Length: 249
Image (cartoon, rainbow, N blue to C red; front, side, top):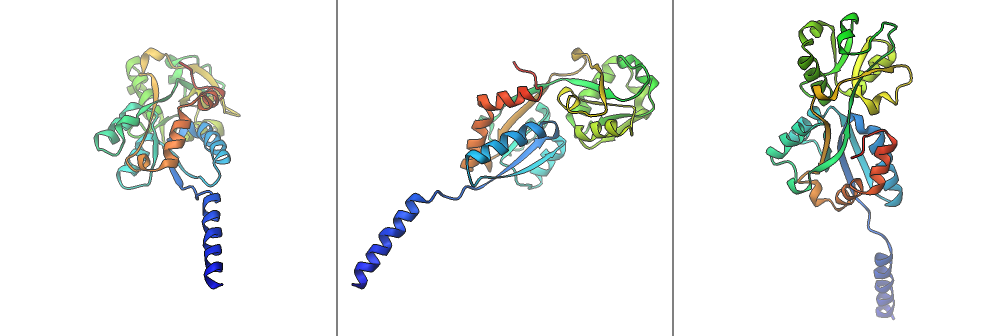
């Protein structure tokens, strides 16, 4: 009798295992700050469709994120706001090279709430404080500084520049009126409540704003990270990027 009950219990236990979905794992994302809204929407919708997946998101300047990954911070997927920092991690063998692909593009604008007439780079001398992402770690700052150099006004504005840790902090300074203006991406500017776009930075003055993404060597072993990576390359992701103003090819 005991053997019969034991056999029945074992059968029921096996059936429970078969019908109970395996607990999904965690997916660590390290993503350029300017993609925060789009990635939040994409990860939230993916988590609703795949119960049990937990996203741990780290947003910031691409250089700071790359350095964190290099120093051991957990990351399954890395999305940079320029090619340089993706190349940096790839060269140090932190990335799965086969997975690296272009996720999105963007453009650079200058925003502010100043009453002064600012219609282009040539008018920036009128301002006292200008926010820019720290060029050493923030791609938006690198793009902006290159534009200033090509325009021949970088030295003229050097003492007016206020460094920010990422492009969202630049926008925050402009929104609060703590600076007269700030260099940000167009996608950030259209989210602004107070600051407005004063002019678009001529695209021939800086490299095209490109967002490469890829799986890390840890991420390529994480089936949930791989699944989300594939989702980021699909039509749903394209639609969300378009919704937030990222230029389409």
